[in-house]
Structure formats: structure tokens, C-alpha cells
Length: 124
Picture (tube, rainbow, N blue to C red):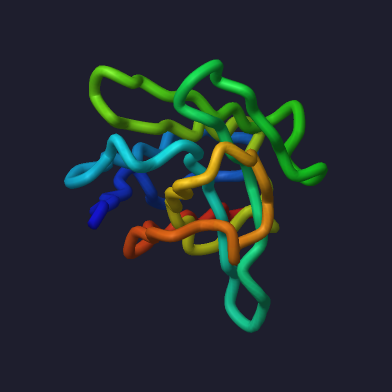
């Protein structure tokens, strides 16, 4: 089993920045790809960004390209999501997810483990 713990959410004004962290524990050697997803009230969960542990290949949703950056610290088993130029439409619960596959994908069904989520609220 793999446990994921997100942190770093909060309330920020539009145009501001936040950095989310996701610390992985347990059988972390089984995970190959890490992703961030978000879910706003009344909406489906959507892909934000993903990175694989090895070469650091990344993938982003079009809505966050140029504003968000995903990175990883292999030594700390931690993945980060730096969010800049935040907009009110970025308001959501952000979830960290881990996949045992090397495929860097935005499909939620490809991820095996999920964190509890952290709330991000962007005020206008």
C-alpha cells in the first residue's frame, strides 16, 4: 500500500501563488508516476499535471500550462505543484495520486492510490 498526504492548500487572491506538496509513504518503490487532479463543487474530477519518478517527464492540462509546474524530490518521496497566476476558476479540492505504471497520463482510472485532498480557494 501507498499512502499520500497533501498539504499547502489555502485561500489566496487572484493572481497569487500557492505550492502544494504530496508526501508518499509505504511501498513507494511500486509507484512510477505521480499526478495532481482537482475537483470543483458540482464538477467531475479533472487532470491537472503528472510527472514520472525516473526521468521527470511531465504532462499538463491545457488550462494550467504556463501557470503550474509539477516537480518531484525523489529523495523525499515528495511531489510538488507550484501554482502561479491563480484564477478563481482554479478553486477546487486538489488531490495527489500515484500510479504503478510508467505512462504519464491524465486518466484518473490509471492511478492506483489517492490522497485525501487539500482545498484551494482563489478569491476574485
